Image (cartoon, rainbow, N blue to C red):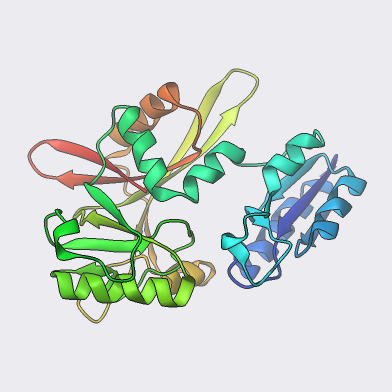
Length: 289
């Protein structure tokens, strides 16, 4: 088979916790693309200089597997001078996969993203943000159980079995743990029961149509018999089916796709939505961040 004469560069980080794809996924992607394209490379972006080397390459397309690079690797996501990958590529007119800078910023500020979801007219769980290491019980007006996660981290970072809290004591312990380990504030949400779907979205620039691929990811039960997509589970994504079950049952496909299409018409700031429907008599979709 004749290969397409294009250069695709896969970009990710060699610094733990900074890449959005695993090393196994990176290799699988390289092998897949190499079968169809003449030039495929993998670049580990750990410094600004590494990013500038991508500009010198002038690839036809960059497959983005990270969000930003920090001049100070110790600060990572907390570095105020970090350089956003897609914003940098935009400034050099280099095409890339996935969402642009504005969507990535929302993804990294979950409470702001929830505000945008509400403005778009969708349901999302009630929430608050805890900035303090000593949260006050009066500040938490949500109904228990609640779920606690970092406001500005992705990939399941900071999420584990203790993210689920049935009382203020457990909530406070988790908030303090996140502050001590990551130095971040906490997003506290009323817990959403139900099935969780991730929807990958590809846009056809020729006709402005979308190809939508919904998947239900089912984590194995934890010590409390709850299914939580923790950091460890997401880290092991490349080790299916041991890490997580993928359900391709499309009984809800048409409903999910219509919801996502509606969202895309309202806003084009995101390329992936997690939809957690409550499976009661009436289908009630809730967008989780």
